[in-house]
Length: 340
Ligand code: SAH
Ligand code: SF4
Image (cartoon, rainbow, N blue to C red; front, side, top):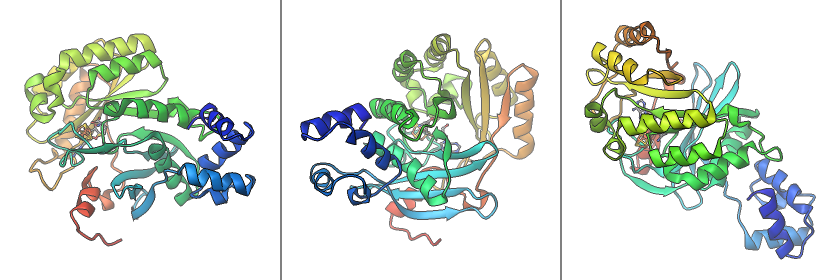
């Protein structure tokens, strides 16, 4: 709930409006029960407990990298579902990669999150709680957020917008939108709607292929909105927001890593103010694909650079706790026990 929504609720409960900000602050500090709200009268705490609930996520598993301190979490939700988040330390601060749905219905061939389809979308509170819980668990303030965990944020549009508004508001965690990235597989209608909010977030678009033939094989969403439609939406988005777009490109050996692919990619991205993020594909147990070797990856990057396309290879964090996005949750759901 936003502060005005809390105020309206309190008024309907015949309580003073000013309590709203106090309660909001408590919620943002990550309290788990109303009893922890010590400056709220006991009777109101009890009434809140009867009429509402706090949608906190709970830590089920925690895998900490001994190399760089990256922590992967499996969180449980109030209805027994599981999601994953990752806590990372960068030079410019602490980042949390959050999930926006339980599972995903987009069905990309290389991704573990979509293997069992979509179970349900997350509420804005469940997205916020991933950040608060990771911050609290590591005893630090989180300064950056990436919506790149499990799920397609634009397939959960209203809750993602609500989350962006809540996480950036000054009474809340106050994480500025400039420090938030939203990643989409290319839900064109969602990009069009998002454009009208004109948020200063970074839009990351999972392109992964330079033509429809390859992209449709990797990402069923391409049948609905092909590359031409997607790039048109990106250009329109850029016109309105003035923001540089980040294109994600997961390199898969023998699939989308040839010299021709680099040439084609550079060609279709001409004229878009963008950055290409090359991600060596993370192997998924259920699939047989591999990432290209290092030389091939840097060759691909150089080919793009020679054609004037700004591209970087994503740094691998938490290599020793490697489990592709969505894999940990799947293993736990399948009943496998994971030692920590
Ligand atoms: N659904 C959104 C955001 C979550 S996925 C999207 O698809 O953009 C976050 C990123 O991880 C996407 O770029 C996605 O394509 C990528 N990804 C998924 N599985 C991967 C894998 N096995 N290896 C490398 N990148 C992967
Ligand atoms: Fe969903 Fe993104 Fe995975 Fe595709 S890559 S299945 S859109 S989470």
